[in-house]
Image 1 (tube, rainbow, N blue to C red):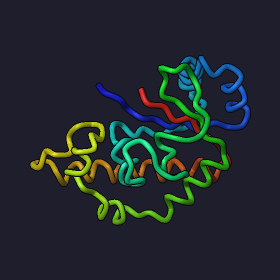
Image 2 (cartoon, rainbow, N blue to C red):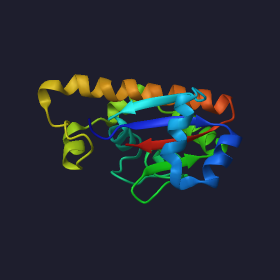
Image 3 (cartoon, rainbow, N blue to C red):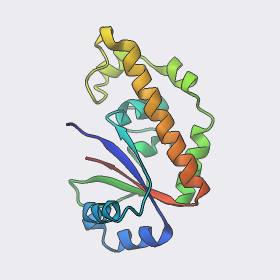
Amino acid sequence: MGMRCSLVELGKDQIDKLLADPENVFDYLDELEENEEVGGADLDKAWHGIHFLLTGSVWNGAEPLCYLIKGGEVIGTEDDWAWLLRPNQIADWANALSTISADDLRKRYDPMAMAKADIYPSIWDHVDEEQGKLEYLLDHYEVLRSFLDQTKKENKGAIIFIA
């Protein structure tokens, strides 16, 4: 199972409704999913590796590159890993990622540094699977970029959650 990261697009009305009752964020997301009202992206367990490749940091980094795990408005309870990004933040993030290609990330990929930094999941030092792990990250990076580009075009925000 493990900790998976998902992004869900939100229009202005959805953002307002969620912010009016932020402690019930997962109930709200379940309701949206049941009604098929949103688009989204699943980054599976690649989220921490992508963040590390983008920022060079385990848990920090400059905005907007750090938005995958830091930034925006934290919502939910203190046990929830969920935060909301407004349309302008999505646009900034999409613009920033448009300048970072898969080849750029390929050059930054250092599985031993990722293992030493304890980047989730703890698979980076398994040499026999090295190429597959990099492609896994790059595939999910493209999912993220596509989601952000589409969400930016629609002038929407998003919620990011790790569960």
